[in-house]
Length: 190
Image (tube, rainbow, N blue to C red; front, side, top):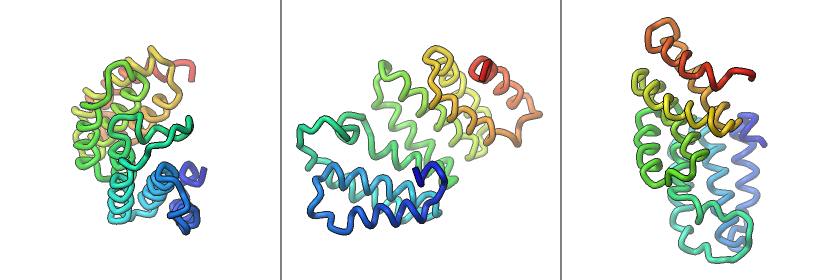
């Protein structure tokens, strides 16, 4: 919840407290705490800490071997930790780096995982806009918007609203008008 509120320092503090006695935690819980701490670090503008935490979590990933039914996204989701890194990079304003990671992640995510693919594409489009590549952002947004309309995903809609904000510098340009037309069906009735 502190991440959603943009309180990076509180997220880092909470995760540090959770990891204070990390040896007593199963690897899956340590990975979850580390990736959440990375999100907090991204909110605080600390790229080095983001990379350090995601890299540490990645080294723990092979140790996740329990059969508990909760918290298995780190094993089940292709490129899970790179999804977290790309999200953090996007939050840090590292558009080119985030975009490259989203390309890698999307190559791993099956077409059947439509909601995840749509969210990731919306984030990739936002990364392109942040990297001052508005044409690329709009091209990616076309696919994400189609999925958003078909699935009615609120999460995807939120990501596309973020894209819309990031594209404001081009709102009066042809590319901005194209984006508004593409996103129209997504935001109808919202």
